[in-house]
Amino acid sequence: MFDSIWEDIKREFSYGNMVTRLVIINIAVFVFVNLVRLFLFLGNAPDGVPDIYHDFLHFFCMSSDWFHVLTHPWGIFTSMFLHEGVWHILWNMLFLYWFGRIVGDFIGNQRILPLYLLGGLVGGLFYFLSAQFLDMGAYALGASGAVMAIVVAAGTIAPDYIMRLLFLGDVKLKYIVAVLVFLDLIGIASTHNTGGHFAHLGGAAFGAFFVSQLRKGNDLALPVNNVIDTIKNFFKSEPKEKTTRRKPRMAYKNPDAKPRRFARSRRANNVTDTMTSEELSHQERVDAILDKIKQSGYESLTAEEKEFLFNASKK
Image 1 (cartoon, helix red, strand yellow):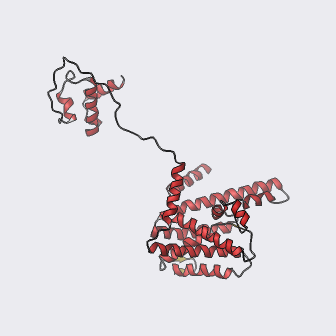
Image 2: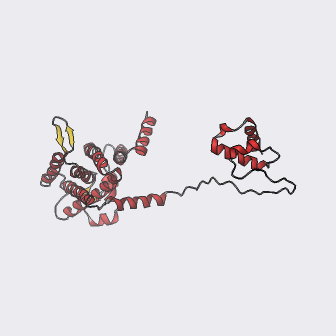
Image 3: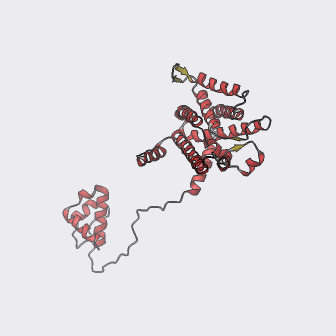
């Protein structure tokens, strides 16, 4: 069963679109983090989850502390793929899947990853700046900022796009996006996840900005894709060039041989029909048969030619 699941995941990651790949990556990180938490809990029972787990988690988080950001710069990126709670990743991945497909259909699959990454970066910046003035959590994690960038981008691209919601029926996309942004806006006043709401709004603002720039002819995804391609090419080994050239061979001229009586322009498939084995050297006849195969296929050879080619391959 697990082998079948693994094969399904590999197939979806290889042939699926970028939205599918992002969902798979986020879920894989979520599973890994929670397995680490489980093993550390079992090893420390009955005292609960040890402090080493929180140190491990914070190692990949975005922090509101200047020193932590400077010493853990990767956290700016890894935090947008990091989830700990089930509901947190569930809603983020559902929104990413629903709205990401719309964005991909309208502006192209190649812009999903840049929009996700840039939206997450701007969301992290909003969180960091707001944390300098407000009392909020010291660490942030989750794809919410990146996902909100995609959500608002979808609403900006196709505001009248119809989505069917449970219990509500058909609703235009612009109203769904407006409600989500409004909930984050009023969520700032709550004492729960204030920094997260700032990150969501930062991602949302970038999503709208991304689409507005694209309409003006400025594709913000282009430099990001160029950087990603450069990194991929750096780690990708250069494949050996395949060549179909024949190996150089030495030709020996027999002074007693009679001059050829056929024109060079004769087709190769007629050569072996008109010339005898005495008039063609061994290598020339092999070349003529190979040319005939290239032009007309192996089945066009006579039984004599097939036998000759078979015997020649043994030498």
